[in-house]
Structure formats: structure tokens, C-alpha cells
Image 1: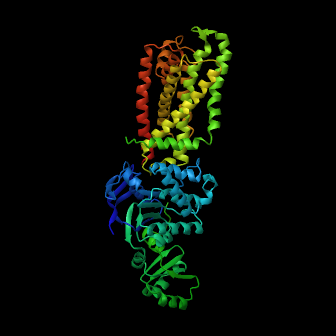
Image 2: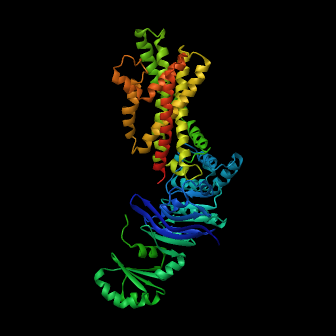
Length: 305
Length: 255
């Protein structure tokens, strides 16, 4: 696969604040690439530079071989953006929202009509075509944003936290649609704070924190490397740590104490669980490791404002 | 500056949304100028008698026309644009398409000018029904051009205000400190000759003064050499305000 987006020592500053701090990455054609990170990690700033609505402070960023800058209409013409915030036109109906956008992309009227029909079907909003925006639920608005992002049949789709604030049904529908788009050959760029979302959709991810990339790779492999396969969470007060570490430490590949819980990471958790039963620790959860563990290990388990 | 034909698309978007509240805006843009025409024109005009050989309304109408263009274009590019930019985040989605920030802002200024033209046009129709007619058909056409021109001027000036406005309340400063004084010091309701010297000088710094002077000359068909100066003043101001407004808005939109 060939590289479609390439960043090298990319920086974004707002005044003195460094939102993105010398990051480098390559995104391949046809993959789903995820930017993960807590609030303020620099994910949105990075993707905004990719789709040319925010100027690059320093470093290089190329999209389809072109320099990404705010006046590059060609990149914008080939990119679909599903924004984080709901930026629909409240004065217009569902269909008018799409018609106006089709205009912005110079799509001829007849072709636009055809695409709008197909897209409304794709996001299951046909029945709502003549509704005003305020009659739609949040999930429907998000779906309409997806339809709007696809009007120009983009080669690159940027989805900035596309499922924030949605119920599980709506979230799964959006995931299906995004996977479908990827299968049709689009390159998908996703930012998210939901680890499950990244695991569901992404071929490769980078974990960002305070403007920098902490780790990059394939989700399953990252979990394996950073955490192992299994996690054992024991709710127990900290004064028991010495005793438990002596007993369980040798059976695990790592451990961490956070608040009221002691975490043990392991490749094969069975010997460890046997010991846990012997020690009679009732308040214990044993589960497969997830990207969330990697994320929390790398970015810290304390709150990030 | 990165302008393109897509300015027209932004204008068209506003047109589609406009059709939903066109009637309410007709009422809103008619009521205030109508009050001026009735109270000042008919009420006070009765005491004033003839004014340069014609009824006072002939003096008042060309001034009120331009005032109504100024008001509508200004408010559209302040409140209207602010809602689209801050409340609805419409500009954010616009600039993610091939429409540039410059296109979007210019499209909104053009839209403000169009709204101004509609208001002024409605006033002209009302005046014609009251029997106050521009001197010729050419005058009517020239007045339409002037209204568009003045709409772009005040739309651009309002854009500058919008580009720095933190909230709605901020617009009060502009309307109370700039728009309202212009209304009373620009010779809309009475001639400026009896003003003391400093007030005359002050009024020369108000773009509305020059716009009203041109409007009155066209309406009555009395062209003077002073008009060229009037026109130059607002032309220079308009070009400057347009580019400054677009630039400042772009700075606010693209970070």
C-alpha cells in the first residue's frame, strides 16, 4: 500500500501553547488510522491540519503528495469531514443541508440529487428528508453529518470523534457504516477517546498525549507488548500490597497500583488466578487486556482536564 | 486573499434559508423607516412646509432609504453572521469544503447588501405609493445601484465589528456609538448647513453623510460636483472596510 498522508516533525502552536509537538506519521491508502488520546492530546489539531482548515505551524504535512495548507482547495475537494461538533445548518431541512453542500463541491444538480438519495438511504434517514434539523435526535444528526461528508465521494474521510454522546445502537450503526466505507476503498482517519471504537475500526493507531505520540502500532500488538493478554484487577487496600506482590508478582509480567485497585498484567493468567483463589480475594476481576489498559498505562490513570 | 466564484454558493445558501422568514424580515425592515416617514415626514413636515421648492418628504425619503439599507446590512452582518459563526458553527463546516474563508465572508457581505437592497427597495415602493417619486427611471436604477454599493459598505464595516465581537452585547457598542449618531448627524432628517462648524466637520467623517448626499442628488436629479467627492470617500472606505473585514474574519475563523 502506498502512503497517502505523511507528516514529519509536525507542530501546531496556538500562541505559546503547543497543541501538537513535532509528531511524524504516515497514513497508508485504504487503511483506517486512529489518533487516540485524552482531551487536549492534540488529536483534533492534527486532523484539522490534515483537512486544511488549520495552518501548519512548522514541519511538513503532505496529503496525496500535495502540501496541506488552508488555501488548498484540491485536498478539501477530495476529503470528507465528519466533525466533532454538530455543524448542521439549522435553518435548512435535511435534504437542503445536503443540496447546499453538494453545491459547495461543484456537484452538478442531477448528480447531486442522485447521490443525496443514495446517501440518505445509506444513513437510514430517507424518512426524514424534509424534516428540520431540530426534529432529529443526536444520533440522526451524526448520521446526517456522515452523509454530508460523503457527498463528494471522498478518497480520504476524517472522522473526529464521530460517536461522542451516542447510544449503543447509534454507535454500532456508525461503526458499520465507517467499516463499509473503508471496504469500499476510502482511507479513514479517526480520532477517538473510546478504546473500543479504535479496536473495532482501526488498522493502526497512534496514542497521543500532550501533543506528542507516545506509541504507534497495530492495536492487538500494542496490547500484547504493553500489557500482555490478561488483566487481573484486585480491589484491596494499599497496606496489603507487599504481601500480594510477594505472592502474585512473580506470576505476572507487570503490576500497577491505582487508587483502590491493584492491577496485574499477564500473558497467561491461570496460575495467577489460582493463587488469587488460594489467597481468597473475593473482589477480583479477571479479563482480557484491552486498548484501554494500554492507554491508561501510557497516559496515566489520573484525571486529565 | 483567496476569492472564487463560490461566493455565489454562500449567497445561495442564505437565500434558501431566507425563504422561511422572508415575510417577518419584510415587516421588521419596513416598520422603523415607516415610522420615520410618518412621524418626521407627515407630522413634522406639515410645520416645515416647502423645502427647496418641494415638500419635506422629498428631502426625507432619499435619506431614509439609505438609512434603512445601512441598518439592515449592518445587522445582517453582525447578528446574522455571528449566529452562523458562533452558535451554529456553520462557517466551520463551510471552510472544510472547497469554499475558502474569504468566499464565505464575502458571500455574507454580499448577502447583507442584498438584504439592505430589499429593505431600501421596499421603502422606495412605499414612498412611490405616497406619491414621492424619484425624478426619473434612470434615477430609480441609479438608486438601486447605490443601495447595493452602500449595503456592501455597511456590511463590510459590520464584519469588522463581528470579527472582534466576543458576544451579542458587543454589537450594542457599535449600534449605539456609531450607527445611532450617524442617523442624526448625517443629514437624514434635516440639512447640515445650520450645524456649528465642528459638527459639520464631524459629519464629514460619517460615511452615511456622503451616502445620503448622493442618494438625495440622484433622487431629485440635481447632480453637483460635490458628489464626486462624496463618492470617492465612500468608495475608498468601502474597499478598505471590505478587505479589512474579510482579513479579520479569516483570522478569527482559521486558527
